[in-house]
Image (spheres, helix red, strand yellow):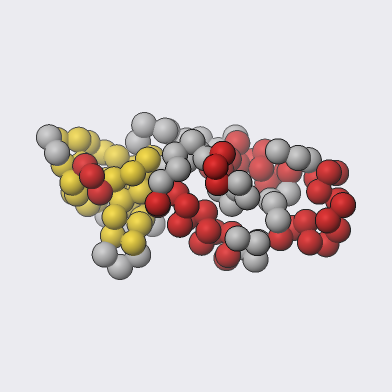
Length: 117
């Protein structure tokens, strides 16, 4: 990834292309558990961020981060989450887990931040 100095050639448009370097470094230092962080299928929101609490046979119990509620779903309805350093990334091919939930979440976050998507 390029630095803020390299992004200076884009002028004022740079903030719409990539997160500032300080924000990217802070994201890399956030605590993240790759084994338990996941997205879980939801009828209303499509996907929700969650943490895997336990696996039992073909079912998984997930604690939804926004509401703190526990949901038990099929193992197929849970997909892995990328580390925070990939939030709002401009090249989604660089993601550790390239799945539907990760791509949609990334596009949603970029759109909300007025970044080109």
